[in-house]
Length: 358
Ligand SMILES: *Cc1c(COP(=O)(O)O)cnc(C)c1O
Image (cartoon, rainbow, N blue to C red; front, side, top):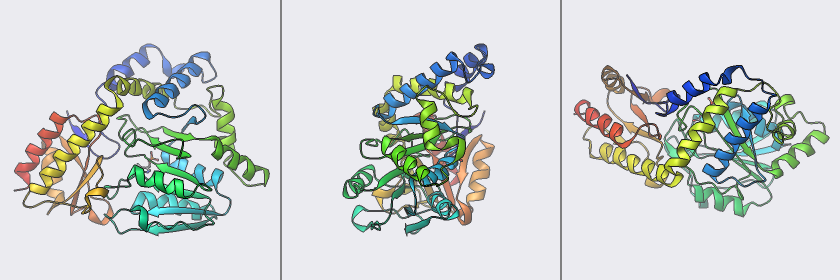
């Protein structure tokens, strides 16, 4: 059996198989999405997510096809003219590109690859309606501190704030009384196969979308925020959703709740420290993200010589580690540090990596 330390799709959470068997036994794959049974699955998964991430009652939780879809929906539903983006890698860049493609004025503040953002240096134009932040830039292994995002929001009470937390959730402890919308997909830290996006939004986002609709803007037909919202009030979805994934997400959340979110965050920190320590002590590898404050706990990037060779030798031992992004393919490793890989599994990876990085 292989172990995946890839930043998504990633190692499945250990309980996934057993929950999948239960789902098959209960024939979840065949039930109607207009049935009481589905509505109670939606409700349960939403309640578990609410408890896990501390989401207030007034915020709604929607299911989409992917996180990529939510980039588009956020722009369509919450921007008339202008969006603002912090861009420091390929994922945050795509969010920005989507806004341009949707004919908005997108303004970006960019940091070099491997660099992050500090509060004092962020300048948001006054005309921006939506501020788009990426908690964890997966391509570079750079994290934007949660407190920075909260402080920023406090300084700009007139704007809507959205956080892409795709490759870190449930790690970031977002204050949803400040952050208006956030989203993730399930194939990263939730340890599930791809095919489901989760979008959390507050009533301010809905009001904005309704205003845009009234002015004749296209907000996204079946998955516009008002349509999703209306359906979600009855624990329904506009289209036939990924019922199985919604069920499975509820179960994984239940497991996370049993472990405890604090413990998950603490274990993530401990494993991250172990990996960063290891890279720091290695003679041939080095930590890519220089500023400690910007280092991601969930996607850890190491500079190595001959990455391709290292990845190949790891794979021979059934350890699958992510390659560097884009032009960094041959010079970096990206190690995912998600809840599905525990401390012992991580230690084992480092032990073998040790023999390859001599
Ligand atoms: C993976 C990823 C996405 C895209 O997720 P999809 O499920 O492929 O749509 C978006 N943002 C970040 C930060 C990611 O890591």
